[in-house]
Length: 332
Image (cartoon, rainbow, N blue to C red; front, side, top):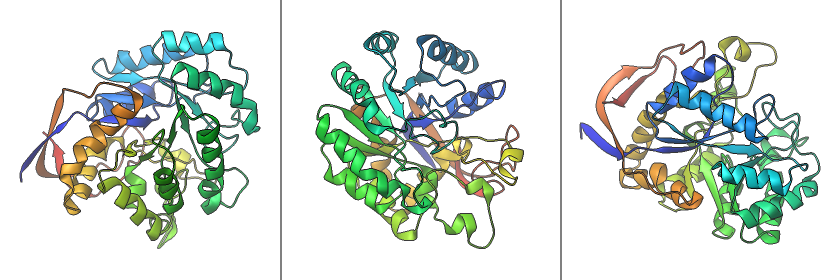
């Protein structure tokens, strides 16, 4: 096989940051994706109609062919009027961040039950509940597993609420998604699909592989790979591409986030091809996620060619995933 035609993918988890760099990050993701779910953990957060609209317009100005699916940051002060306004402007999901668990989450939720009135309204209005499922103040490798009971509580208390367990990183999370109702799905990133803790701290400290949730054990990666290649509609793609400038990563208190946007499709094709699962890739990147979010499936296509290229060491001042490495698939 020398060429491969795929439906133009959806990425259901993308960070585009703010300021001048936003345009570069938006154009990078638009080279490979038609729709993206835009994360709201900006400063200030996307939690008003004005902030959401301004952010969406900035994305469209940089990448007119990209369809940004907007989200709002969940907090206990949101009213039914707020949510009705979000719904009217096409916002598709609310994002739950536990306080202090990741980048720009200092204003996140510290009292889980305090948001239940908001969640109830989200359920009635048909919003998706997207969650960074980690429990703060727990040992770093155990944070995701420790949060699973809260996902189960939400699924039981709000049976019609669609819940996305973002960036599953453990075998326990995969198992939990499989065991919970069809209203619960999980997204899978390229970095959790391909790497483990060894790639972060094995032979040397590699700060550009530092992310939240942190990379885990080989057994966790194998569970994630099995889920991705299984063709189970409960799992679909969300990159969690999260750029930070080189100096923000290579310092005493390095930021969490992996900039995977420039290499997502070439790596996904490589991994699915390796597992003889290329027939499962279209639904993983452009089917199951759209179905879960209640969106029409794309009718657009993208083509890749088997042509080697070397990933730049620096893109827009950011060290990307697979920097300096050779990938065998490239965009046509």
